[in-house]
Length: 255
Image (cartoon, rainbow, N blue to C red; front, side, top):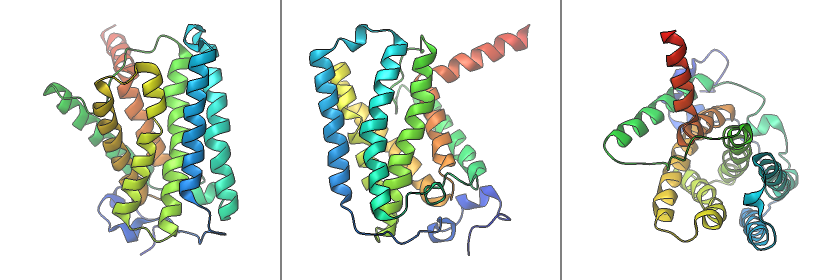
């Protein structure tokens, strides 16, 4: 059964993966996905090392930091990813799932369940995803809630996961490989910011678990906007932006 416009969004949660998958188009010339990831990870790691050594970027204003890191993410993340998709013959918004919203309703249900699960864990003294101090500047909100979800989902659930599927990877293998790559790419930023401290393993585990969850969602719904929405809400939780929004709403309700 194909997923069509008459299918209710929530039904994809209960379908077998083969019933709800996007239409996978055959890839073009075979391109090494490992070479792509090594290039992205290597350039991102080198950038952090050079920035830490030669520039005191943390002393700059939030707007400057946002512009700096966003520009380099376009160059070191999206640039190689676009080249990868072009060489594979699938560099289109429709293949990535950006031209449809089908499955977005299911993604919102999935997101609600994920946030509720995190809240329960927090109440029990556990923390799946490290929560930072509330953002102090709009640029910090934009980086966490707009840039990161869009860029990272295009790379890992849009490009990598779908190319793995097109090359015959099964669901579990494709989801876990994409989640591992997604998590490893966070390491240079964590190490640059926090050093090799005791929080790295817990951060790695939490992000890995999230990557697996969003990967399974991406496997089931045709639209990449579903995983992007889940990533947005997860980061809103992690940055406490969601708490701030709920507090403002509560204050307005009391007035």
